[in-house]
Image (tube, rainbow, N blue to C red; front, side):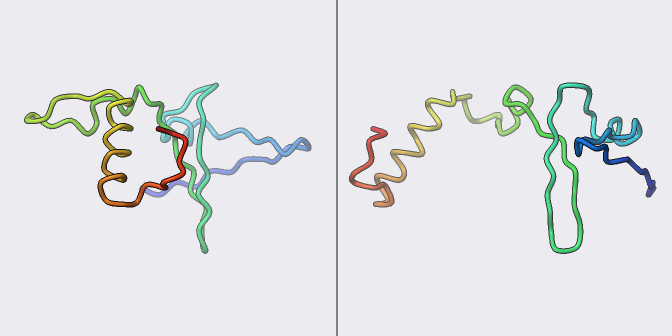
Length: 91
């Protein structure tokens, strides 16, 4: 169902999302949103915290890994494929 809601831009260029929009996005005071500007539209998206993303990519046959382990695997893969800059100071 399509709904139309309107918001006012204040003098300080702030706005308030109407309650139905906040409810649809699942946001509350203090949360962040992301505006995505395309050629013919602007989309408002709720941003997710790292904690909300936890477990999103898990599979029954794969053990969970830490962010540090993921970063190390990405770096190792880049090194092995030859796509890692030789002068990088990250290692």
